[in-house]
Length: 273
Image (cartoon, rainbow, N blue to C red; front, side, top):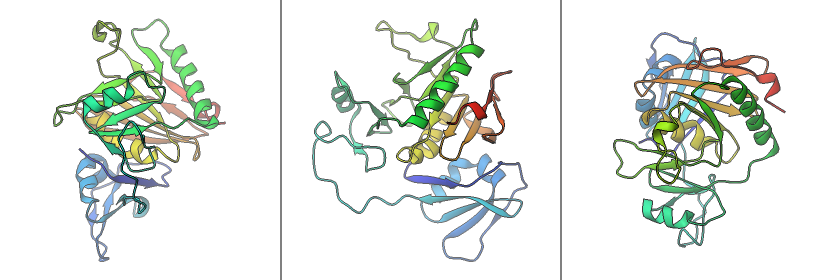
């Protein structure tokens, strides 16, 4: 499990570079290549708990992995029911049973990730515009196929091998290709989506860039799109055998092409408002 980190990036393209793992002499700082991080992502997130990790491409700094400090302001003691907490604040630890009780007949939207509950904030216009446009592309592309696009709110239960309880997330968009094989008696989906899309906001980017990236990778998702409306970029991760195999970042002037699905290509100029 990886938690408590933020990925701060100003990338243009993540390229495959030669291995580099060099300490620059400054206290608690390590410099590594983008390829090394891509191939050993989990290791460097764990390392970032103790020291800053700078990611380079061709000798140029392109990203940093660093620990996220807990907010200084202490949150008042309260039950989960009385005080749901947003993504940008300290999360509320709870058992899976407490999460189920909280969300029963509850109008607010929550996610449960690695034993912590998060309240989902109402999305802004740029978020909804990107989500709607992408869904339209996905709907047209998968017409007549076995795969079906879905939008939030739609609970996805993902089980890490190291946890007894599942995590419950509501991706902004997802492509499900095994729907008929994984519907339970209550008409809920119990499988793992082939492709997941999360659209960043100021309050969710830490979770989407790190915690959910690790969760989706470990639980068998095939491809993960991170859409950034503020920077007008899309990061695409392709997972194979629960490892990151390929990564690309696409600008608003480019097309986003799926690694997993042949022919799935999105003109990003139409996605960002």
